[in-house]
Length: 95
Image (cartoon, rainbow, N blue to C red; front, side, top):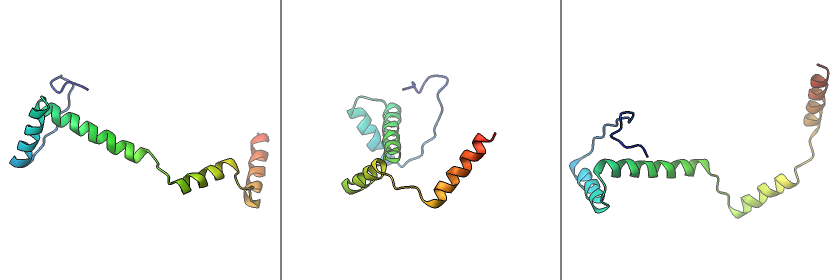
């Protein structure tokens, strides 16, 4: 993590009520960290969790089986798909 005091660090202004600040300050002190470090590390942890939740797909057992079945034995191509593939091959090989 970048040290918040380094010249390349970005600044975020945060406004919160006194009770919220006291609570966060108390938690930071309990963990032996500065308020700034506690807030930055907590925000980064929360950001990582949020991004992972949105980047990962969790399937139920039934859905996982359906996906596996579709991948291992795909349906035969229909007429439109077969015709489109034939047309594509003609255009690509005729160049």
